[in-house]
Length: 247
Ligand SMILES: C[S@@+](CC[C@H](N)C(=O)[O-])C[C@H]1O[C@@H](n2cnc3c(N)ncnc32)[C@H](O)[C@@H]1O
Image (tube, rainbow, N blue to C red; front, top):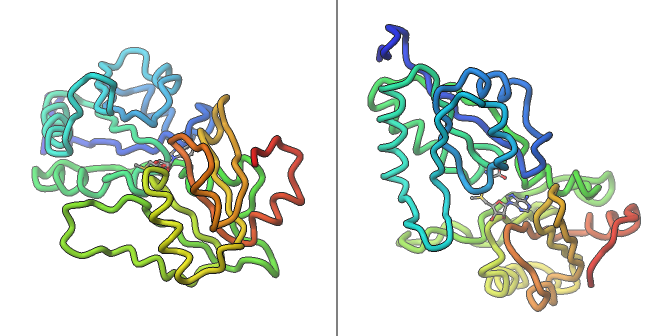
């Protein structure tokens, strides 16, 4: 499809990284600098918007007391803006294809013959552990990791998450609201003594690291956004770190 300037339309789907505004790619900054419109989510740090000084900014995340935009409404905004502007950036927290519904937005735009260029971001699932110094794999301890959602779409007729993963390290996103149920499910397959930790607001000034085990981590005081990490790498991290840990 051709835009107002007579050029082939392109929407950039861009990962903003896990929170720290410096954890964005150079490629992302370059497209933000030429953006006419930036459509952004709650977990994309607003500091990043400084790279798009002339752009119209459209917030589509949740805000207390305000109507929360559905995915259909976001898709419609994307289509409208893509048809009326030269450079549209869709900015998402972390990586746009890791629980970011980026794929759905690409499919919507494709149906209207609008091209998309995707720019990866540092996903919180790995970027947050690495930032605090927690290795998700470690020679002799963990040769694999799984990243899983802790909050499956409740409208699904059958659950896809079965919690019987064989990876050494399990990283759970969006799982704090259901941490009790999720850890109970995991304990069907793993020892309750398996080391576990939660990293809250990773890479941000109010970051907190809460330590425990699979059996007791659900009883700790935890706030979102946060990720849960389960596996023996948590003990390796404990040995390596000089960060303040909460028990
Ligand atoms: C809808 S998912 C989006 C994930 C994102 N696309 C990514 O790659 O990081 C949101 C979840 O990511 C995790 N998350 C995102 N940013 C985080 C941060 N700074 N610290 C801890 N967890 C974070 C939380 O589990 C949160 O519930």
